[in-house]
Image 1 (cartoon, rainbow, N blue to C red):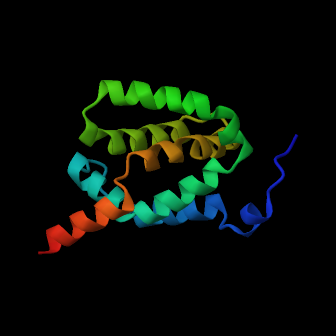
Image 2: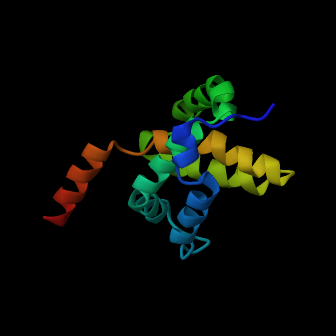
Amino acid sequence: MQDQPNTEQANAPDIDDQVRKLFAALEGLPDDVSHEALNAALLAQADLIRSISQACEQTGLYERSKAKVDEFAIELTDKLETDRHLVHAWLWLLDRIACAPTHFHAVASVRLCMPLVARYLPSPASQASSEQGAAL
């Protein structure tokens, strides 16, 4: 059975278009990008990542799978230092897309994993205060 979008979802930007925009913004990173540089690049795209995540969380697929995503998030936080969660979640998402056996699985990976990436972004308020402090 196909998910029926609500009116808000129907007016929201397309998830796949937003993901293409995100990938385009990150396109110039070298293959051997450092953890710090990738973290900074992801933080620079935080608003877009949050927007994609919100759209993903409204899908039926995510709603049905949220418990498993939460379970994996616990495993992730238990294994790594806090400052490594964002980059690890991003690299895990990319691996899920790259290893997906079909296009459907790749699309589903984004909808399940992008909320996990967004979970490890600093809150918009704390990110804004960090950026203001760095500018001084």
